[in-house]
Amino acid sequence: MSVHRNKMAGNRRYKVFDSSNKNDVIRLLVFIFLSLTLIKPVIDSIRGYLKVRDVAWFIHPAICIGFLFSYGYATLFSGRSIKEI
Image (cartoon, rainbow, N blue to C red; front, side):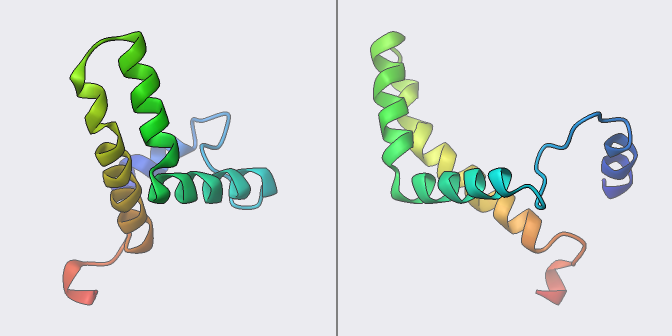
């Protein structure tokens, strides 16, 4: 998987996240804060439900938390096996 990711990264004309860019770091910290406090996901769920009357919008906060923890786990432990953790 890492070989594919590294090979494809060379073809991009932009970075998805640039840790040397202060604006990217600030936006990441805001995303983490809002996801953990569930403020933004709940507001998005209510707005989405009012626009498209589908109860699936109410799993949005859980999905946001899931993505936050899965990306965090993958970032912190990338390149390490489960036994090393």
